[in-house]
Image (cartoon, rainbow, N blue to C red):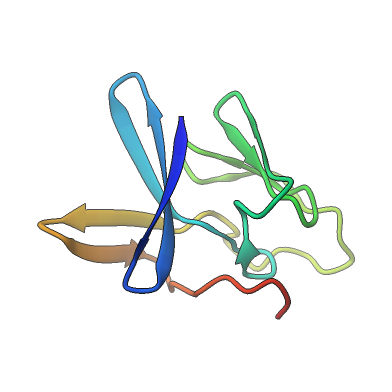
Length: 102
């Protein structure tokens, strides 16, 4: 199950499986667009970005299939993991607010 919440202006997606929660910034690192925009797909434990069809693991955050784009993914292209402790949010990487174009 996937749900999206917003904390401090950042969309956070929470994937639940077998009693575990995996939290990531709901932005595709390829072009910093909203990965949960209309047309995204969940396929098993993977999320498919609706813009260039890049596929990421919802368990590890790793890129599984590169985007169908002339522009390559940046180095270490992966979802940005989020930790929420006592209401405080920290990111493993540089967070961004996803934009439809940018």
